[in-house]
Structures are given as C-alpha cells and as structure tokens.
Length: 337
Image (cartoon, rainbow, N blue to C red; front, side, top):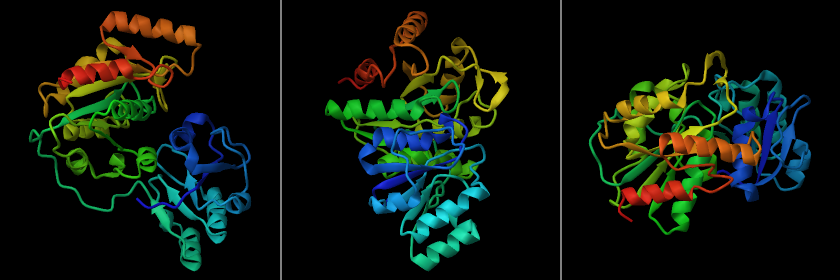
C-alpha cells in the first residue's frame, strides 16, 4: 500500500473507545505516523493524540485523513461527509476501513476528482481469489482466535510477531483486518471477501514458506459470535494453523453488540476450535492464552491469569502488559528451535 503519511485520525462522534479500535491500533503501533485526531461533538473515544481541526491537521503536515472507527455494518454516517469533504478540499487523501466505499458518496467522489486526491477503501480487495483447496503447505502458522470479537486478537498477533522478529526468527505478521492492514501496509480485510473465497484468500495471504518460518495471522470474529462466526471459520480453514492462541477479556459479560448472548465458558471453547481447524490441519493445537487485562487492576489481572493457567495448563499472559515471551517459547518448541 502507498498511503501518504503522516495521518490525522478521524473519530467522528462514536459512542465509546471500542468503536475507535482502528484509531487506537494505529496510534498504539504506529505513533510516529500520527499527528492528531479530529473528533466531532459528543465523541466518546480518545486515542490520546492532540485534538485538532482539519485545517490544523493540514497546517501541521497531515497528508491523509484516516477514518479510525468501526461499527456494525461498516456504514459511513451522513453527518461525517462534510468533514471528509473538507479534508479533501484542504489537500488530504482519505483512507477508510468501513464497508461503505468512499467513492459511493457523490460529494466525496466529486471533491476527490476536483482536487486530485486519492480515496483508499481498505476493506475492498484489489484482486480476485480462488476457493480454498486445503492442501498442506510448508511453513509454520499461528492464528489468534477469540472468545468474542474485538477482544485482542490483533494486538496479540502483533506482539507475538514483534517478539519473533526480536529473536531473529523468520516470521511475518499477516493482517486480516483494516487496522492491521494500515499498520502493516499489506494484507487483506478478510471480512470483505465473498464467503466462498475466504479460505482461498487466507491461503494466498499465508503461502508456502520455509519450514521454520512463522506466519502470525491476525484472527477475526469468533466462532461463538452469531454475526461473525462465518469469517472466523473461513479464515481458520484457509490459514491452516499449526498453533492457536486463545484471546480473552475478563470483564466481558456478553458478546459484543449482542446483550442476549452471554460470553461462553472458556472450558467450552477449545474443542470446537480444534475440531473445526482439524479439517485442514489435523495436528493443530493451542499453545497459549492471551488475556487483555486493561480493564482490571494489575493484581486482579495477575490473579485471573494465574487461575486460567492453572486450570488449562497453557501459558497465559497479557502480551501488552507482560510481553508474549512464554507463548513464543511454546511456538519455538513446536518448530524445534
């Protein structure tokens, strides 16, 4: 990808921090690419960047306005259009990971054409994919999977990939969502692929490689989420993981956006993931549990992780607060390193 930097993040007026997870991801993992954030009145999110207007962002050298939000359905609210058009008219390109194409809005399309600016629709593939084949291919692959969606799969994969790189291990982070694509500047927003081709796209994303090379693949959705289980399954079959890392957030009581569906018991999630993943890799196994403890006090997080590890016998860490070293140790043991 060739998106001009630095970025100004547009958070609109989203109601909470989780709705700004794209902005958070970029600000956390590529802070040197970000100069500020634009928020509309009533915005309930803050990525910790300086607040500014579009004009101030341009004056400080901003090159691309990045729509740093996610929402169910991936729609672009009509009242955001004026800000996006202002950014274009002021000389910025625009990048969005929403399902709605920027160019499908007449005012945005007209402004981009008039001012010669580029619209980046990160959610939409620029190539075609075949169906999955399920043929075993060389190389090692780890996939993050979740108790729920929006729970830490991307951060876990990024932390594991960074640790592998620090150890000098041949490895690649494989982005499967719009935020990961912005961070890695490559990848596929797998949830925008037609369902028949999700597995094939995942195979393309994590191709045959050296036997000791690790692909760390960003998970999507959850097998237990009524809205997003389909993309989880297709990604799992196509990525053909050798190792699964379960991601958990202990303060959740129900599935994201589905208050009538409680979070499953952790004891009940391992076997469904393994059973379905064995379709394309019979040797798949869990190597660790990643717990996002940001919502609890450190001592409480340590207690929760200790109980989980004692119960399930898997390395259990908060990969951001503690680092993913013990999970990476398990990956290294699998590949004989």
